[in-house]
Image (tube, rainbow, N blue to C red; front, side, top):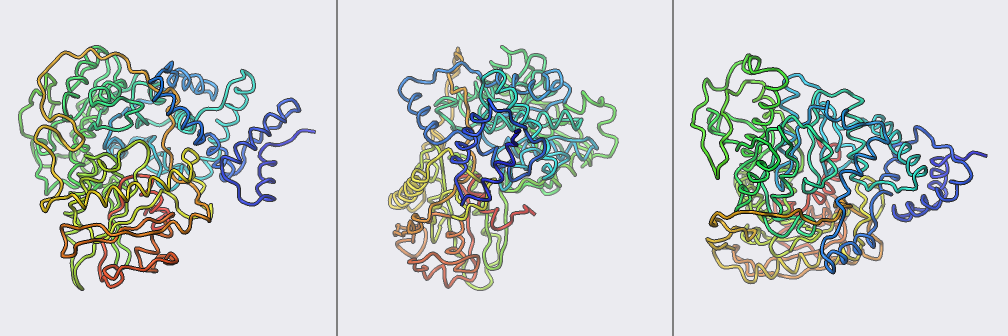
Length: 624
């Protein structure tokens, strides 16, 4: 008798109490093995919930991730760089060829900071010009559907479900026929995104790189219309390398022969590396000019994403879209809708041998695209009663520094009607990032209270889209405590003027200016199974007593110390920060007087985009 996989899965979910996604994945694997010789009917259109469960099963578990990390530390990166050919093979299994992808008119963007915002600006600008857009990004904030967008909107639940099972079933069949394995979470979604964009016949596909560039799954794109490289920084060092030059080599790997590329000013000698790679590859590289050179004042320019850092991203997006439109439409159609304001000014310059991109007249359609762009979780302000949440997914030392500057400016503009503003830091940082370096820029922001929390919404298991099987609960809790202790130590040693950096190096330790030299960078050995740091996990009930508090010296307030806390879930944290207004106050925790009596509270949520997403899943799940 033929069995249906999804029916069996659904039945098991009904009859069993909650089981972790990893346990479910193990059970699914056993099921596939059991039925492989008996004949299995693969259901074409199961439910969205079942799709999310199956997708979560593609995450590598914590034990596998840890073994890979130990192998890298012991033997150094030693891989076959199979990501790109493997993604190509999987795409063909679901019916998408490289020729199909070539026809998507791709804008491909890599970088450390701002690549998602730059892509969002590009998508909004081209949609304003009347084009049907596809946009692939990562990670998601609340629902995985956010990663694949059509005309600015996440795939509908029905469309996501349909396309998911189309791809999943094809890959299951291919796995069974050739004895292979299913792809990782990010690789699967990359293949699915290309399938959606090809089937839906988008005019343009805006593709954000996952990690790196050279060996990223998205780099199956052979003939992008234009490539962009956003601001670089030190991140993912075990995969990309431990210097800005090595990271630049990886990020520049998305450039293609004959394809124009645009970048922004870069730290250290990374711009020279990008330029050299462009010459080796045969790509024409230009530098996006400062936003004011387009002929408008900063007061007349409105961006849909807050923060001064977005001006660089907006200029890069303008150049990428201008290049794209020139190829798609021709120069004659670019300025027919009026100019804001009349004529651009400024002369092109040459930086490190890279010419500045041409400055063009910005039409109303460009401006509307920038103004109406929405990209939650980046320099976002969300007011709920007496509490204003400032949310930003910054996760590198430099981006945290910029985030702190944005928070200070935005917070100081708020009206202090009923007493002084109480500032609270809500922070988490994950992966291999050094807590002390990440937190250092925040030590001088004058917080009255600090709270540390992992990217876990609650113990209920109600947020399947935010499941993370890749890090054990114990490690998440340990990292949370380490972050708290690092912040306490930073405040203890901070001077009255706050943390400062030497003139020779920036906040990430990158030399500010170095002599020119020849680069002969070899291809880097990196882990071929680049497993994306996905969001969130489920807490265990026995960890509910995790909350504890200590006091840390605070050199910027009238008090000698500030209270610092750690909680196991977002729900616990919100209950505490809101003094019970947004949820129950954790048991055995006394509210500090400065928080319980405050009429206005400003909470900075930062350190991890996954933390921001977990917060938004409770505060604003519709991302309005």
